Image 1: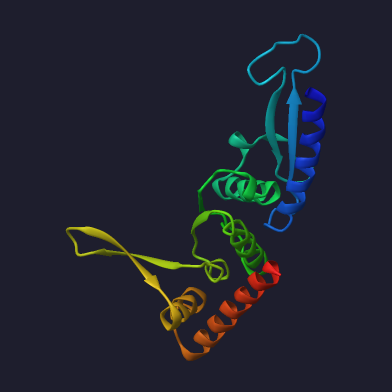
Image 2: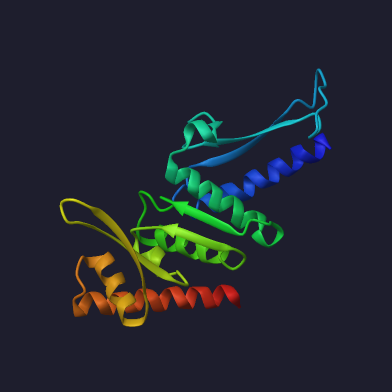
Length: 202
């Protein structure tokens, strides 16, 4: 069993590292440390091994426990990579919540993150908090959260945006305005996201 864990850990680490390259973490590598199977053997309910996930955040950096070294955004992306690699159809997790999964990224990397979140959503409910239009464009349902303050009470409201309203919201996320040019760009972004999702389904 210990030998199988070592082999599986190596395969998992390689697959997740490959996935991280698409999530704006190209210089990061995941390592799965399996210890305890040699020397003094201590049997427990999970066997003789202790398993720990280590993240090397950049070239030349030492591997460190994920819980101690990863930022909130990095942790979300590692989690996303793990779920995509493992294939959520084999898990019983009904809902995932990702906050800051797109922190510090933009452009093509943001589109890749959106596509992978959409892939994960084929098997589970995925809730994503984002400020990036490239990620929001992949959503099945787009919710907008607004906060108002009248000087005495702060209040947050949530509303669903669809069709033209969604195009205008994506435009505002991109350009800060829902001008005709921004709306055209938003339309293109939404169409591109739909095409990517259709291609993945095929």
